[in-house]
Length: 285
Image 1: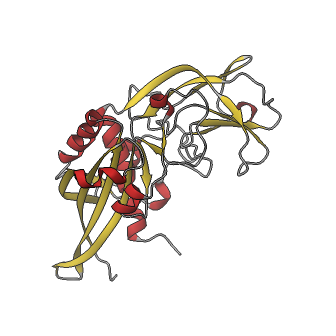
Image 2: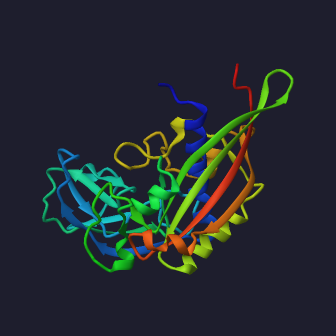
């Protein structure tokens, strides 16, 4: 199936949301000189894997004070991008090397970690809360070891589309496509939760660029795509589509009711952000 409007919208919103939170909230922390830990990953072949205690890493170079290009060091000093086949997996907070690199190598590095991981989900709010099996990022548990790959780690925000309707807007087949996007935030404390809710409560009437589905920044390894030859910068990507915009008509934020607290599997604080997205388009052309 070819990418549809919904694919493009959710990808574009994800990219905007991630950038907006990092930029408006300084929602990241820089780490230097942390050790990496070797482990095996059955889904990765012909690679030696070294994981950090933290995920997801910041990869957006438009966040000026973040270390969007990690500094990785080995036994012989700093390692350049691609050296020994090095791939940076920002999503899972790790680096991959050619299997010629010893599993006993001493790997360390500096990078920036998001305060809130961001995920796209197809679950509703109740399922995310009641059925979610989440891990706490090690910066809070202080368990200095690698984070298991592919697991969803909190604090985090889960994005999903709920409803979409087309309303006639102008002659010639132009509709106003109205999409509801829900974000469920899991925070470690009330300060975090109030912060993320406040940031996006103020996002009403903001606009974001409708970036093609292929513009998603990361490849199958969780590294920045090679097509971004100078690194990924959200502003540079979005500016390629100056007139193709989506409008956030309204944003509503709320916190979970006390009645639901008993269903939360971890000592987490939960809030909701509901976005009404308007886009003028010709869906029948």
